[in-house]
Amino acid sequence: MAHILIVDDSPTEVHVFRTLLEKHGHFVSVAVNGEEGVEKIRSEKPDLVLMDVVMPELNGFQATRLLTRDPETSSIPVIILSTKGEESDRAWGLRQGATDYLAKPVDEEHLVGKINSILQGYPESP
Image (cartoon, rainbow, N blue to C red; front, side, top):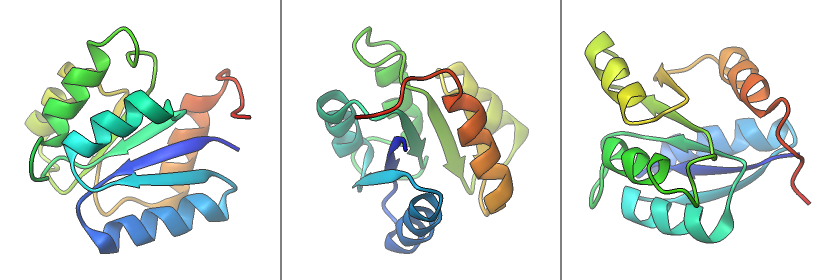
């Protein structure tokens, strides 16, 4: 079981992703904007982060850049999940340090496969 932090300001998206992740045995916590996400990542040290892009306070690109450039959080993988599905958005997200970038809506099997692939080799959460 991994601890996954969802950073998304949409209650509907949070519900969908939380339900999906918990169904697959993961522990889930939530932040409703990039600023809160960065704070929770620093304090909770999740195994993986699902990051939206379009959010108030601090957008997902900015939050990802902060996290991946901070030695304390740079080893935590970030998957950006966004409705911004252009190749330029994907390229920009990866340049900010994201491990992967998936366009919403995302297929459950594809997302779970990506998460499992990224978490392989990472130690289990207590």
